[in-house]
Length: 315
Image (tube, rainbow, N blue to C red; front, side, top):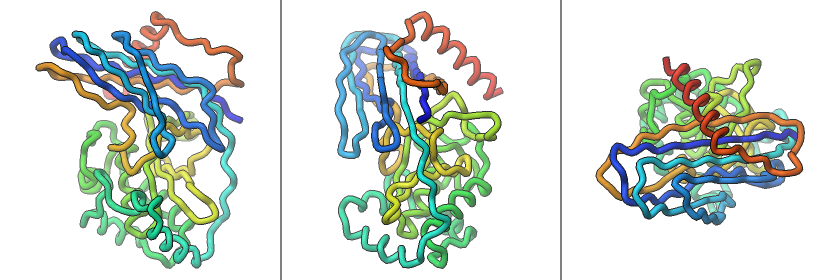
């Protein structure tokens, strides 16, 4: 098993004090057959009582309300997670898998993963990309998934800040550039268009220089899971041309980014807000016998280091 410590901080600064903030967070890693979250802690400043629940997809959602005036809001999340290596995939499947996939469209559990959603659209530009990549059912579904994953990786440039979290899919398609969120949305649209169920995964990637990962090492990550009969949900990372494995730490799954943002909320007041985000993923030897959470002073030092790294990457 591979073990990771994850530290994720988010700071909202307001141009004027606001009277109330209501916020929900999706930062707790999932626990399932291949991944186990040993511990999770979320600290909020100003202090607030944090509640939580699990949705119908087993995502953990934490929520809180700060009813008093404040000039900034800080969330600090710490996790300890263990992952086992993914099973080795076959080289290909029989083309008879296509009728089995088509039968899923009659099952309610897969409707959301086969149709358009807020950020996954079947636009003319997407159709042009599908034609350019030669996407049809002459390949078996697994071979086609590998082809799409690699094709998107080489067809697009990873350019930080070239899109925003609410950019429609055509922005990245027209410019042939984007970030992991755009890569995931484009792959999802191609999968659903051809009849393969696909869902968006929000999480973290343990990056290593020797792997030449494109995605930033101080931010959350996004990739895709596709469903194939007999194999289940399989992870594909078109940003880095990878099959999701023991370096991909899953937090939440949904139709697209709109379902699983790390934070989402509202505030009351006449002010603008600015958000800073920093992430640290560290591989460790084994779970610690007791949780050792960072103190406020250690968090402040870590946040300063993360912000400095971001500024250097943007220059």
